[in-house]
Image (cartoon, rainbow, N blue to C red; front, side):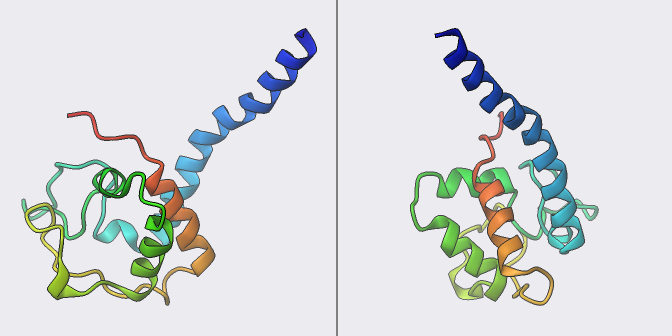
Length: 126
């Protein structure tokens, strides 16, 4: 029993330290890919001009898509190909109308990793 418990703890403990490392790695990826030009992690903060940010906060994205099976694939494609300005569903939460295509700024594998991290974010504390 003790051996099983120790093995379970050893399997979980690296993941605990890794979560903060993942946050740092994902924020670095987001910064180098230009994502932070339009997005932020936390909702409610205003941009330098006092307006809502161009894109929705990632915790809001995580909340909106939580539990939707197709969300990772759908959002990865939105990152790579952009979104339709006539189908904006972030009205009032973001000042931008559409997301431009970003396939030149981020590789598909990195976009998948970043989207997975965003969707795993905990809800915002309000």
